[in-house]
Image (cartoon, rainbow, N blue to C red; front, side):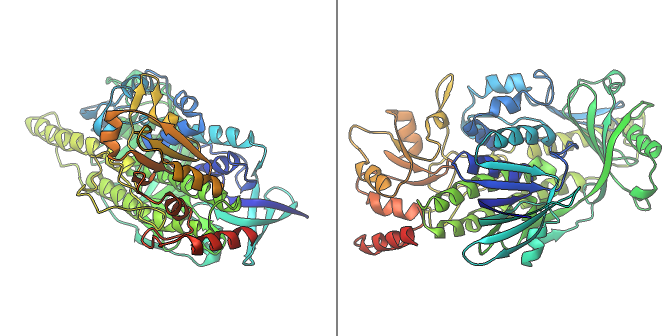
Length: 572
């Protein structure tokens, strides 16, 4: 047993925990991560990296590395619907390959104006990259094969005990903050007595109940299926509904089917499992099971709290999705980004500890929003049942397949063309200078770029190779769109006094000024607009507010009170 000290302890080495380690380590914060698994994920798990997540990976410098993983760069990422994979194709929603995505993103505007487009890659590959980059940071310690066994929040610190899974070693660590990213069965959440709220188990014809998952190898699939390859393959019939994501584009797949009444995982032999797969394919085919398991569809759950004292929660520990739309893992990445810069700022004493209260204030409403969207997608596909005669070679069969195809094509577009979900989340907290609400409906398939504080900064390509986001600083950015007439000097001076790492970016652009509507824009480390205006604003008050020292509604007539509070914070 040894006594150690770190700024942060992270429980859980999935996407949330690994992303948080990268965010903290890039800022010089010391963190130790424990995960009871032997290594990163073996199973494919999540298979869709949304555009906003890819923008975060770009900010950290490894988006291209991620986009090179998974399927061949020319493999289509279509979503295709079949009666059975080798029988009748019902509908297809076409999406670009990785190569096409790199080319198209440079010309897309409106809802899909972005630094990065989505990428279809299994979580197992993403976790390896996140781990590699986290382990390269000198202040980060990544430890698989270790389980957090207990912790105690003493008010001024947290003491954590971790034990080796395959051994007897024990480590006792004193940290400033503990973060539980230890999944749906979170030890940390349960120890805090925090419960999930929401829909705990909807029952549907599909996507509602116990799901049986196979990670399998079947190179023959592309020989027996007479249709163009797709990333997501969906079988729609009365016998064996399923969805199956291509993992490598060569013969590895993540296959999921719902267990019917009377089917139990423990009773299913490997040969019977392969027969389930063959039923969805619609012809005899050889396959090798790499792993198998079950999970429950129908969840739309969000924890009642994301924080208790010096302990925080993120990822699956605070929200559980039915994976329609692929939102769970991507919501977890945004959790880590939001919490990471705030923890670092408070630990470095460049922000008030009250800044940490805004993590739950900002992320919990987004979790409720996103689980709601995923639930709607799951209901759309899960409650739409195949009709008798769908697979028959008859006029009725043709009619029913056309009817189903029309529905499924519209569903595919609704579930997988979701710029509104991806870019449209908005924060409302005491560190955001919210403006009068714009009449912009929160729709999954429509994103209207707006620089109104609380949302992702609108994007623009400055030249064929440079995204506006590439010009932002890693921490805070003051975007000056009329530097010759609106200097923002008070903001720069206040940021210096507050030890805020502020990059000043000057861009003379009528197009950007039209997009952002004000000559000065203060952008947070997570690329969210915190404030916009001009030199008439009191820069010192704005800076203090976004760091948690003041309320944006209180705009005091003088700064003496908040100056005294800042000094007390720095001396404490």
